[in-house]
Amino acid sequence: MSIHCELLILILALTLDGQVHTGEIIGGKEAVPHSRPYMVLLERHMQDGKTIHCGGFLLNEDFVMTAAHCQASSYTVLLGVHNIHKSNGVQRISVEQAFPRKDYNETDFNNDIMLLKLSSKAKFSENVRPIALPGQDVGSLPKSCITSGWGKTDKNHNYMSVVLMEVNVTLIESKQCPTNNTYCSEGVTGPDKGDSGGPLVCEDGKAYGVVSHIFQPHSGGPEIKCFAKIPDYRSWIELTLTNA
Image (tube, rainbow, N blue to C red; front, side):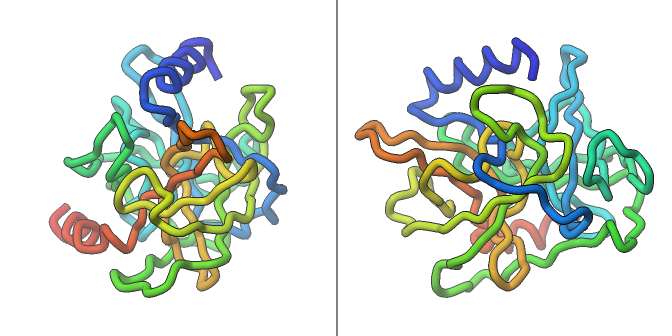
């Protein structure tokens, strides 16, 4: 990660009421290669010429979902990736149009969700498949979930993981979440800087959340990982997919 990015993260940590973007899998393990064929490595091409990565996931042959704070000047979506140094079978598709939530709040990361329309259709294969979303009424809190990404794996260095990593997370009751429309998990393990935009996949194999940010309670205590709660956005998702 560049010095510019490190400074940006430091500024965010100092100014955003204890909240920072997320992006690393801490305490996880390497995913079985291509066992998560919906995973997207998102190249964000910034105005200053730099390329920064986020995660994302494939919804259908035309759309990818990611976090609204992953906005950039332009994007390239990489499908079928496991090891970032191996390009065999990887599809690179530019993004035609981005649809961040208009009510996304960059101060508290509320409504941190975005859809990306691809410039050409993704070709499904053994290594490239979409993931389903839950309905609007999911009832009780999902108990067992996994998140995955290529973010850094150690808080003491800033290198991306070469391979896709994954980690189990346990969701906590919503009253402990700092923002609305959010799932939360607690503790050291989980996503951190660079995994932003990746999916929170629960026991039925559907994507329930989008990796958003980390919140450090002012009272101390363990940091809280936050995920945009997909069931709360189903109407907006369907409307955007249809009208785009």
